[in-house]
Image 1 (cartoon, helix red, strand yellow):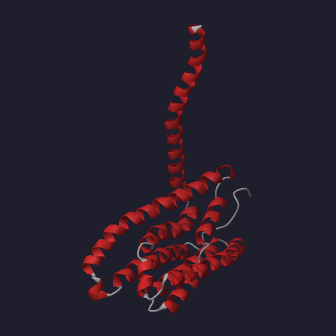
Image 2: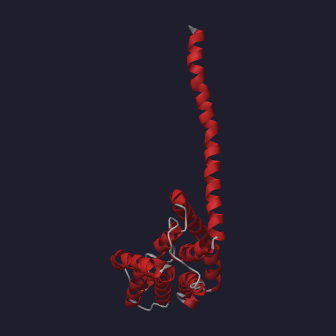
Length: 241
């Protein structure tokens, strides 16, 4: 009968309404959890000091991505040459990551994070001053050897997080890095516009490109300086200990 159909369908409709209402609540809980982790990262010196390296790099690297292919083209590289440079960098990333992990375990976060970040700063400096393809090869070698710095900072973060919250902490770190990369990308357009107006290529050559690429030096270099100042206070222990 019609009454029975109503009795059967009513709970389903109500469940649907509850599911609709639950979605905003779940999103609010996720956002609150992410904000809570961000506050915890910043309040904990052990975590904040280690994460400053990938945080700074996420912002400054966003200024390099849009202009680096044009910079390489101006130095005479074609698509094949760019691919070879990427191959060198990725191969060294894979080879250096286990070494960085061993350093982190054996010598602690200062050496495990600061050394790759220092190599990154050197690579960016060479890249910003590059005059030929050989300079870019050297820059990519240093950049390749520095590729595990973000993973080492995340490993340090995990060791200073309760096991039940490690998945949340790693996801929060990823969200923060993506947000900072987005911030850098948004800042790139007005910065590039100003530099284009002040430093036209017809007069200043590739100086605009070099200045934007050099921002990566300050990003990684800033992290290294902070790590050096805090080297005596950083410890690498498991929260399970």
